Length: 639
Image (cartoon, rainbow, N blue to C red; front, top):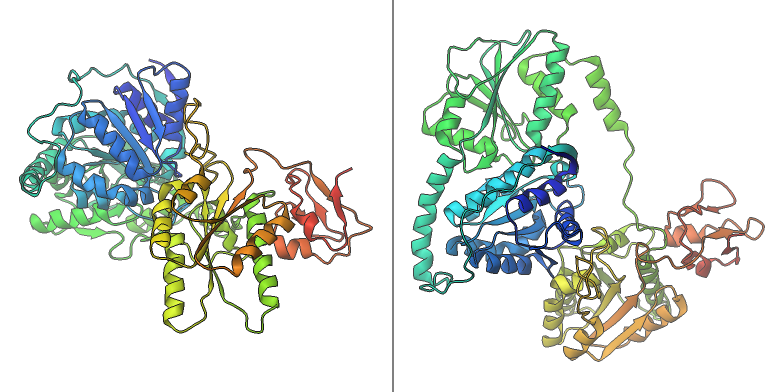
């Protein structure tokens, strides 16, 4: 069979196509984004002619689209990151009660660290809360095979299934063996009207809840295909076990290989049953690949052990299950993990960290090499996130900041200005020297937060502050519109700043409804942000290019003395879409080294390591923002 070097997200996409996927929807969010992009690539290449793919306006809508396809008997998939599940949770909770006809796989990519997210949410908890099976792949190869099994499992029980890869599974590469297409499990007749099956009345919900509980018990028995290993490490005594899952299993296996190599004598054997009379030097390993767990299988693993170390990122889900099974079966096995401080309860794990914890658990001495690796890791510099050189958001923030500064300069008492941000590249406007994001909660929340802050200040008897709410073009369509409707309806007094850079920039430049493009590259209907605003009754709307600083500041200044809902739409493309101009340079003879360009803008293309200052031509996009603030007129076109 053929093999292909695949990213984990690509493996999930190809695994879904192998399983007969017909419809895929989602909203871009790292680390899940490349799944839908890989499907779109297959569609454009003609390798998936019967597939429909779309970027939906948000995760809730994406799941509802996929649910409609699954009710019609098609195999459907929806993709999102862990915080996107918060948005999609309303339909997902109800969908499990109603069930599906065709297989429905909900891919939720968790982000331990977090590397590019607001939270370290653990989707396994949501699976238990929603009473939905969760498949937890530990590698791209397993993600490929597990995606197909998730579709089969969904169709067997007529319920949605969650596939939960984490960042390192999503973005790591592996040589994946490509398997032949799976056989179709049933014919598809389209949506069938039958006894209001898909109408969630309270009486139906009660009956289905009873059935869900029965299905969960059956699922646990069906998900008993755990992996077990016995590893013999020289010098290790006692009856010890290790339980893990997901990417932590891969870390654990690599760490054990290192320890085996360091302890010279190694013997590895695989088996599916365990007995209490095994040699004392065996370390028993259990891989929990899915939830709900099979109590019998886990009991067989625990039987005869003295203690178990649980290695899992994010929350103690496996650890809690092991404690429950020990208590239910009167097993006196000591479970060590997050709950008693043996493993970190936050942050991303690594092979180095797992090796260190295993050494402690197994009573082995730490190697000099391992200690040096951990010390070096701690010394590595942290690169703070920063707006790209030439990013139009920097110019937008600066225009607002300068307009407010000038406005307050003419007042005896300065008027408070509060800047509510949102999720996107522009969240980075909180960093110095801009310092232009005072709040950031979740997608679309900035507009509503600004309304609450404004009301609170007035209730406290303070002068009404200048409440700005920044939101990107993609986020505007995602969850910004309800907040704007609320502002208009409640007669709020806020200034909404739409940062329209013609793409979904933070996740890699995906299209959205404000563009004339779909995920497949075909034409799409463009939704005008300004016309949406006008349709809501907003009359104070101005559009401006933020790189034209004089016009941009005047546009902001014109809104400051007014009341009600006002909107400024800053329009300039992301540098991934188009560069503003040619690189600039600093004339050393004219430069006074005042560093105003550095202290006010924070552009990474400007270097102040030495005098005179310099501009890195490989980073500069020629936006000209620094040129507009230079009092010495020292910045111009590069020669």
